[in-house]
Length: 130
Image (cartoon, rainbow, N blue to C red; front, side, top):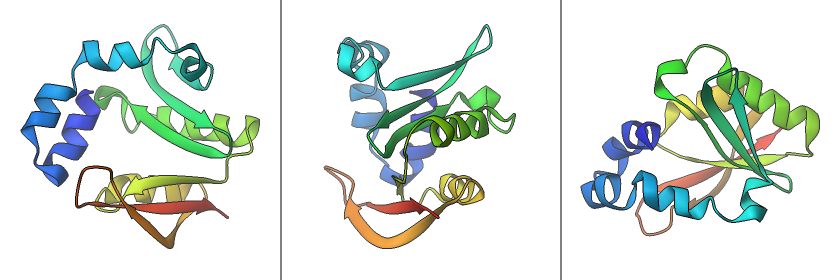
């Protein structure tokens, strides 16, 4: 949640979401769904440093704890997804240029396909694996 706040608060500028809805307990409640947990993979070397959520051929989420960014955790997670699952696309917030650059380094490139992030006026852009 900390990473989401750091990355998304400047884009969405929505404190009600960042500090209201985006809380440990509400997010943890979502994780009680067994079918969701079966599709999540955690980078854990004694410390949980990040996770990737895969659904079919989509990388739904990939987050690395702020304190471990730039240390290969995200690269390990995305490469794990590519090597073990038929992932071919993902969505990223168009203004999250750091994420888009990261995904491009790992073979995912922006398409012309866009949609609104639910409940916002911000676009998501589809990135496809080349």
